[in-house]
Amino acid sequence: MRPASPWRRIMAQAERRLPSLTRLRAREPLPIVLTRRRIYIVPTAFGVGFTVLLGVMLIGALNYANNAALMLSCLLGAASAGSMLVAFRVLNGLTIGTLRSDSAVAGKPIRISLDVSSSDSARQGVHLEIGARILGAQVPSRGATTLEFELPTEFRGWLTLPRMRIFTTWPLGMFRAWSWLSPDHPVLVYPRPEVFGPPPFEPQGDADRGRPRQGDELAALRDYRPGDPRRHIAWKLSARHHGLLVKDLEQPAPQHDWRLAWDSIRNLDSESRIARLARWIDEAHQSGRRWSLQLPDGYFDIAQGDEHYHRCMTALALQP
Image (tube, rainbow, N blue to C red):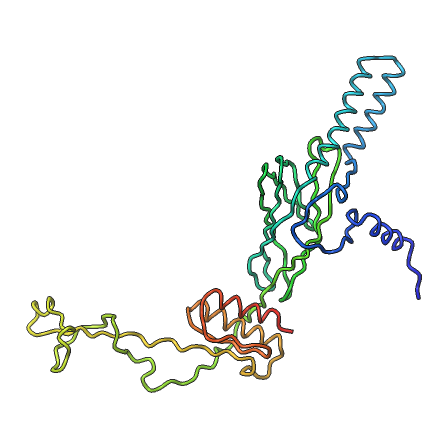
């Protein structure tokens, strides 16, 4: 067995002793409450430079016995120490609560909303870092704020959220307090529909398919024929005509339901079948048509609407 490198041993030890300090923190369910055991503070570059300058001022004040300079150095040192405490208190007690996501197909970004709340005082200068993006927010007192961001998608199925870092440099920018967030809350990405393809197979109806049928919509006016119902006579229009006129009522033939089946698609691999079924479901949903879906591991009866659409697309996204 190959021995672990010194760097890996150091990281493993850091993960055991200080899991909140590293990116390797295990996934955890929401809500996440930030406590003192998972918040860390380091000086920023500005804070390091300010500390060096403060040390020079202190040495000079002591060397020349300048009480005014000594008092100024002590005041600035106390202010910097106080800013470190304020930075810690900005994050301490924050709750990372509900996470919501919109629906998106593979290849398009998915929008995610994350709630950050405070149970006591207001918090200013809170930042959330996701990859190369940094979002800023102010958390109201005893309230919540919502941070929205987008993540790129490539494949269908469950998308694991990247590890995020919540941090602040409030109030003076001399110290950075941070904590790593690893929410165990994957989001679902729908399959990418194919761009072009044949329509689904529709069973042939009877000979009357597509013909006008008796209904409630006015199609035209025609001359009266013996046997026409009296309630269909257009009396007002007939008064200005030489004979009786009858309202010809009809209704359009209803759209036939689509029966979408996995086995009806031949000579395609699994991903191509999923893409074609996704396109058919999109077309049926947009046109207001009813459809059913038969998959190798399930069947969805004929229905329509947003709920039926999301059920079917979820099943396609989770196909092995």
